[in-house]
Length: 496
Image (cartoon, rainbow, N blue to C red; front, side, top):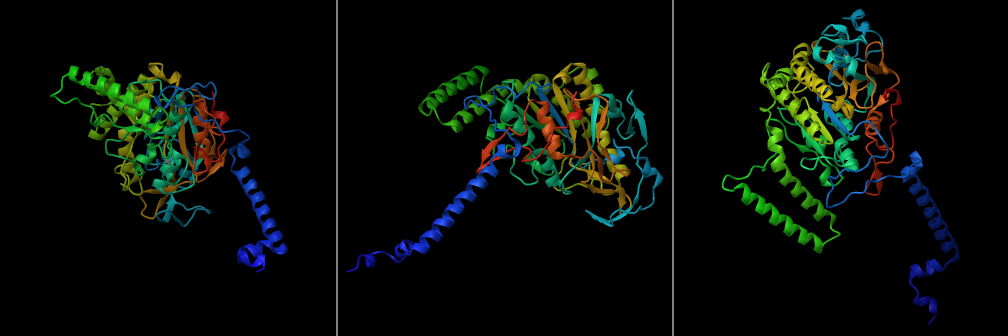
């Protein structure tokens, strides 16, 4: 029998010279293409910088870690306003809105996010110069307007979406999709916290509930679970921390000591199990919180002057509850919590200006209602932090997901979503005071001068905390992931 007959059909094809050369050529070409694609996936190929991941002790994932470089901001307080605050009715003064009020100038779209458009509408509140800088701010926010000389406004922000869930995701996680880590998770992953008895990242939800994207706004995404935000507010303290009445303080301490001993012995048997170490660390933090949280939640011990300044005893019940949240936020920053995210607005199903800033109708009424809740307490909190010296190393970020149109909707009483131009501001450590960066066009319709992407905004916040957004990464599903994806530039002109 011929030996070739013992070889399979596939084997005989491989022995054929033409097939061998064809298969070899295709294989080598594939290897070359794979090499080129892997080089493109290397973050250093985009930025020229290698990834820089923090060294995290699994036994103590919350311990403080050094920044990439020296920076002014050690902590950050984010004031987030879901629903899209109208920039043309608050911080972005446009005289042409008065000039063309009631008209429809050329270039305006016939249809936007929620349907047909109406005519240009002047601001629903008058603008006046504020502070020594003379910054034009509307009467809708008189208390925040009084702090204009402390703020660094960015008027040329634009985003990739006009839908609220995706807009919240993009602003808070850098991606429009679900499942990516929030800014607070990235910051605490990189830096940990100097506060041992409280979480490194706290999300203070609005008295009315969660925002549209819910816990995704302060989630850990694919980062370790230790870096997700712990959510509670002045009305709803963390759950399951109170010692049962049937247990004495001595019983509780004995139980905690025994658990610590048993956990330590168990961890010695599995020294390389990072998940086990992190789980133990989270339980130990919960034990610390049993002691620290009651003191933190005790707002009654605050002086009467503080309650009066923040407005916990005046206005609507919602305003009073939000004012208490603002005092809680200041106390958390004072204790050394790395990131505090304070929400002003809620509602996972919408609300049309009732539970958040999404004013598609009756904007004069609905924006006024939200401003009454937000203005005095927020301004008091910033002023209080300034008085206590906390702004020397704390960065304040006031943000919303996009703006609103300079013209009315077809209903004639509300403004539609505007992803092409909106305003946010920074204050405190590392940023210029009484400064405005970028411009929208004459109507506040689109960015016109020095446009700023959300990637740039987040890159700048990370930079102010001493973190290089091009190097801070986490390897996930074959990719080096970043808060800013492969985009973003630090807005150097706003740095002090």
